[in-house]
Amino acid sequence: MSDRADLLRVDATGTIHPVGRTASKELRARIGEWRLVEGPKDVVLMRRVETSGATLKLAGEVRHPGALCDIVAIIAQAQFRGELLVLEEDDKSRSIYFDAGSVIGVATNVADERLGETLYRFGVVTREQLDQTLEAAKATGKRFGEAIMELEFVTAEELFPMMARQVEEVFYTILQISTGTFYFFDRFDDKAVLHRHNLNASALLMEGARRMDEMRFFRQKVPTEDYVPTVAANAKKPPDDLAEVFSQCDGRRSVAEIGRRIGQLEFEITRAIFQLMSGGFLTIASPRPQGAEAITGVFNRALVEIHKKCDGAAKGSELREGLGRFATGAGIYDPLFAGAGPLPDGTLRGERVARNLAALAGDDPDAWLIQLLHEYVGFAMFQAESLLPRDVESELVKIVADTLTPVRPSDALGPTSSHRAEGPASVRAGQASSRPA
Image (cartoon, rainbow, N blue to C red):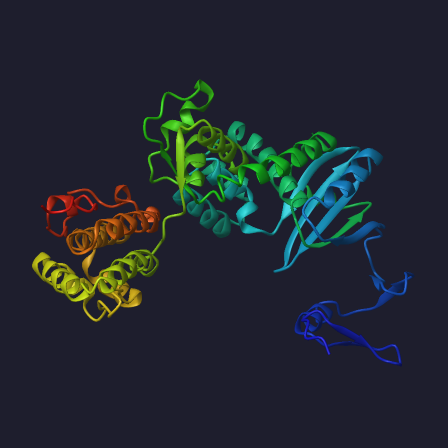
């Protein structure tokens, strides 16, 4: 028997039994009387006896991104009035409301797609202002839009176009859904559309299809909006229309953060970053790790490579002795590494480093840890350079540099860090020194 959570079984008496947990949950939420709608042998469709009177005109499954483009095209061309409800796993629900060929509103229960998050992603409000507005709306029972205007974080003139952008973004997201089900009803409760917009459905559909095609192309160079663009070496002045984006690429901000700073959402900022990369103005690095365990994990991969190469050259004991002296002499590594290692392969226990860090670091523990571990790995490379043959050393330098790309030295704190470890100047820069004479 299948172990699918959505499995039902119909016995010889016609009784329906939920087999899977999801099926049981869904049926328990639908207590009442239902009528069976005639259908083919491999489809069972039921409607509640007491309904709003809306007719279900279209329904089906979504199996790949873009599948809903045809459905939206039918609705737009026929100028239907009604609600297109799209359901995904994890109880995600979105609706598009149509009227005479126009999209007049949307609804979503996905937190990241609500109006407040749209304002935040556009850089219209800060996270603190958003949180304050949500608290005020909850306390007063007012709608989010009313609460945010009363707090004077935005004006009505700023808010209304942002509401239209939210409608557009939810619409584009629905087109990209890869798995789920859809239902189109020929009517809806007008109270569901809090603020009516009149966006041409066919134009939105064409723009959404274009975005899907282009985004697949952009993703070859910008995999996600968490990646971090950096100005390329010897980069020249970019075109004027890309200058603002280029000026925000400092090697620390992610694509999403840059978008918030200049008021662009994911598609627009990704396209701009892609164009700058194609022109040779930018390079891009994978997302920075967050938290002490993730950060330590990145440096552990570099430490493993360094120790492996030195062990292969029968120089592992010298490497470990030198690193031990460096750590003890610096002063800060002993409490940071207490109970964390280093282990025989050179790695550190990330969970113990995190615990120790909490008692040592100041306002920005991640940046402080990155700085210290860069110095530690930098000294390990300094030691390895004097122990390894030149060809092995050159190979190791490249491996370590590639491994540490997500935590480049520019991500670490500068020399103003209050707990900064002391060490050779070349190590403090987070780089290996040149080979000793």
